[in-house]
Length: 243
Image (cartoon, rainbow, N blue to C red; front, side):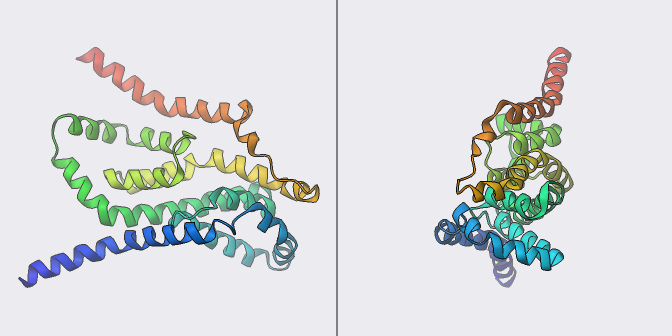
């Protein structure tokens, strides 16, 4: 009985990080939706810029911690935070901070999900047969390409791209690699928009996010999606010819 009780307790502990993340995401999404806005950033811009000028390293560390927290707990405001990185630190430093912070946050939620639901679901997939087994084997054979697609396809929400890999048992090193590289194009775009926020605020306007749908922005990202999918297509064609 004691072994069963201990196993049950360990199982509950493994689920605790994911339960905490889900709880914080729910409460934070409700409480923070009215605070993480362009108006709030505009109202505090002078204080933020003054603190950055006086304490650059501390400001960068605080920004990174905030961004990691937002991503790790799937809180609202990731896009605005990316733009704030550009507003405060410029294109190069802002992009670097955005990519590193988002990657760390994504790895944290990946580990929490894998320790909880991911471990059990991955074991079930490994023991499955038929269509599920074929899908699982296809994912394992094309893991890096699929992970890149999850990061690059604009229609896939960021939090979904963080959770899905953990639930199907992908390798951590592949997840980290594809996350760090796959989010760079989007990070550059959002940081670039953030660089011009000061001028937008001076005009009393709201940032125009229609830029995200412009062909010169979406075109290269879709091109990267095609490149990521190409190994999958070529492998499928090769297998069909060999069948």
